[in-house]
Length: 255
Length: 202
Ligand SMILES: [Zn+2]
Image (spheres, each protein chain N blue to C red):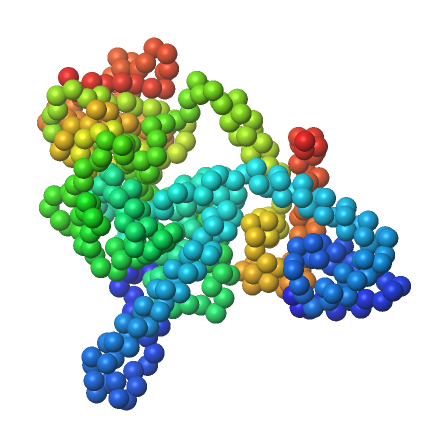
């Protein structure tokens, strides 16, 4: 640290800024001289303790904001060339890609997404991400252990959710929240997502037990279709499906 | 948005010899690209945690913090070469992205982790009241931080996320001397407002 031009003489105590810098920084230009002064000056050593205690309180308050560092970091790859252009994202790809990256370069998920970005179409083991314009969404099979991967999009005013195929059994759970993104997760099965402006297509190639859809309040109209039929319209049909215990949740069976 | 196809500006001007031998030039470019990627990977490992911590504290949204921290590294990758001050460069980019995000009208799309089966907040979890305390505390801290001006808040959060005075100074375009002044002022105001709003911290 440079540019502190305060002269340090016996008769002059360092400023609070300098004492605080002594607490914060390992070394800077005048650090040794100031440290020496503080060691022999009762006024400054008391002031330094005071500043350090205050700094520790601030550090603790700010520390209370922390959420844990994410374990697996995913490519922000939907942004490659503009938002919400045709993209097929694969449930479960995240875990697989993170695993593959770890195998290549320990503790460096970056490596994997650089590879994916630099060479479009490069595939991680057991998972594929469809290239732009590809006809069918790529698919991966979620292992039994891996569940509830999915996607999130910002909230459009109206949203159409389209399950490509009819399926025997299976439930759609809808949660309404005040804020946040529209999110889709599935448990079990094989699921690929395709996203357009106001529409998300879910290719339920192997039926999942449960699809979880979170819909923030900003989305005013939702239609869920299965194949060619419309399963539910929100808010028109919502009363029939809302849980008696929780007005912000609904459960809809495929049949 | 910088295009993915942006040329690798890191590649040195081809020497006379290498212009005669395209394969040598290609190999040289590949080596430069490899070196850049290695440097980027090293920087990512070293800098992602602090950048994430700073963003998480700024935004109160760990997913968004992750997205924006990643986006900054993606932009660095797209840039193709290391800036003079990579750490300050990353901070500047995320500060701009945060500002853009606040005024964004567009949509974001991202992958979700398959980490659990929790959607929304369940009040039935045993540690629900603890989570509530934590959420309340976070809201209080954010409320106090919002009383600081943007630059003072950024300086305080950067410093307490582990950045040095020098890095803070370069990132915010101020002198190192004023970093000390700002930290002292911002810290005092933050604590004063916090205690005014919520009483003394435990
Ligand atoms: Zn003194």
